[in-house]
Length: 349
Image 1: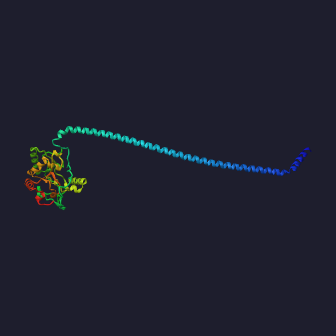
Image 2 (image 1 turned 90 degrees about the vertical axis):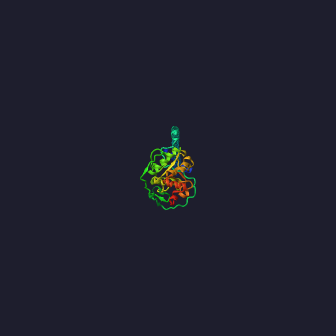
Image 3 (image 1 turned 45 degrees about the vertical axis):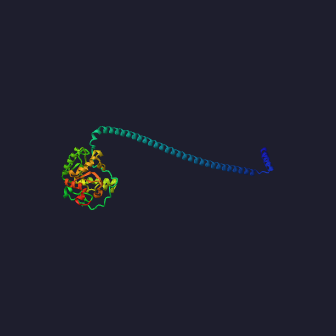
């Protein structure tokens, strides 16, 4: 009975307060729902904030990684460059050392050579001989003595039936494989040691050259034989070399085309003297040896084939060293008349 009174009193109190118990319960539920929604929104916001932070963190981490990789690559390249520089420096140091050693060796060799030269100078100064003088090159003329006329360009075969008077020049040629059958080595002094192709000469001319050298020696004139017979093949090599060195126009002033060289006849010898280093030089003509040759060669059947001032009449520059055997009679007449072989034989060049 007492409990019923309490409930009734509570209800009455509520009614007096203007509140319906059912409404109060509904209001409570609404507040709970609102709180739940608020909590959910806060959670979503927190989740979104967390997601943005994570993205920012991941982006920062990626950038840091990329920067670290770039730095690592730069450090790697720097190390490689340092290694390359070190290797280059080592190679340069090695080269410099090798160059210094080579220079020291060369200096030592030069010193040895000088010592050897000093030891043998006394032996060599009398004859000026060398170990080899295979077809020494004539000096390039500084300029022609006179204008060479336009010679006959036709290639006419030389008349070998003329024997010692055969004409071989810019017009008349020998078969490229022609070689005399009576070649011998004259018993004279040479400018080199040993026997080479150029040491030979036809027997009749060699005999007369031996007499000339003997008489020159008796007159205190020292002569040395340099170059005699020359094959067509050898002349081809020499001529091509001269053309490569000086050009065709210059080479044609002093060198014969293959097949057109008098040396192939076996009737020619280039001779020189120690006073000009046994060289084939125009300076020989102004020495006592060169003057002796010019004045006496005809007595032995030789002529200075390309004499001073004869270029327009022979096609070649002055060669005081080039003597050609034609026989005593013709040589004497050619010398006394101031002729060329072409003029004596009445042929062109």
